[in-house]
Image 1 (tube, rainbow, N blue to C red):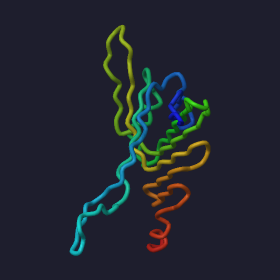
Image 2 (image 1 turned 30 degrees about the vertical axis):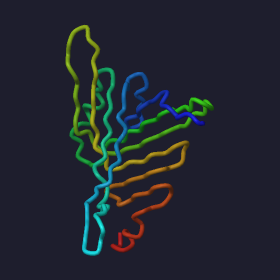
Image 3 (image 1 turned 90 degrees about the vertical axis):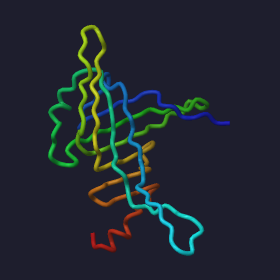
Image 4 (image 1 turned 180 degrees about the horizontal axis):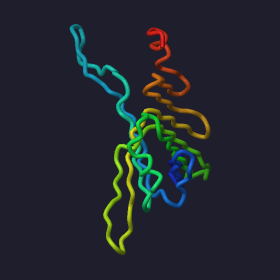
Length: 169
């Protein structure tokens, strides 16, 4: 019997700047396919038709004021900010550590500086909408999604290559 690999430590980088000692929590993006139910004559029941990728968001919290994040707010370009999550996941049975990296490029859609109360801890929460997403484990790319570039790679297979060729992209 094997035991799961659990997150033991993490860091977040914002345009290369390390938030070690500042980042307290990262809600990793939920990947969701946009599906439409379809049933036609001759079918016993409905199936889901895949219509592409839903919006990708990364949410994260730091322990205090983040001036550089405030200065990125309102960025005009869809990929103005690059965030990189680095996680150390360790197996409980073998002590083996996996390096998990998620890179997103996008822009901040929400900044919540929390509640100001003397003597209480503070949190600085940010939500970042991503136009690019890449998940790597131990240096191997598992999933890569480029919304604008029409790239969707899973396990080394570019699932949109034929569509790009068909439309001359």
